[in-house]
Length: 376
View 1: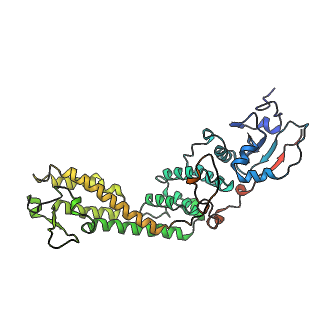
View 2: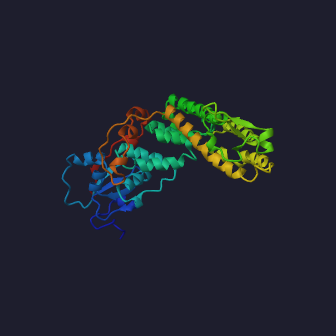
């Protein structure tokens, strides 16, 4: 005789005999069955579904016909989701060990759809963390999702990883952009242009923000300390009392700043500042001087950290200008996944004016409807 199910209370039927069941959700004490669109049964608990999701809570609050005491079968809910999507959403309801790793962008997008459909604010910080990791490899898709949900922080992360000068209208097709308005494309392009300009100013007008005490020897020092300063000297000018002396910098360093400006105009990422291709000519020039060669590498390392910090500050200002914060409002909810202090405002989780256009005519947004298993 074939296995009737997880317990004797589950009598064999046409579906439980011929369809597979996800092992992680074959609870022996289950009191309801969720059946996926591809006919896979999940044996779960009403109480856990009700506590986890207001959608299930409201559905189970509707009076149901009395159970047939002569039938050993459990009530069945036909779901619009396939088994993969159900496993993801049930992983949020049950132990974290039941949740798939969500290492693929499409899985995270499915999870976000489930969070929206079943009103689950708790998992949102976890899903945003997964999107942040995925933005390195798929920044355009992450940007589109972040725009739809009006997540400013995530849009900035994705925008920073998109390549400047490379149109997103390339050979790759991103279905997420079907639901994104033209404003998103314009904002992304504006961000790129403003970031390029802001970063270029940091390198070009370094004497406007860089203090003399921030440049270590041998970058800065006495005007006549060595030949490379005497013969190829740049002078740092500061907005300070005229009776105070200016600070001279080495010519090899001013040449470095010119190369840095050109490099950042092409690629304004902070990593460019410490690239070997950019630094090697500078170090070679510095080591040609008997006075500068000893401490040039240490001084350049210190300067690069200061420069990158200023870059980050300017880039953050550009991001705040291009992607203003979403409107905030209160959210009263409880979840085993996250404390109330870290919950995301509902305008960020469910921005109806943005999400409405993204809802497809497929069955993914259909609410589940409960029914009893047919008697056999």
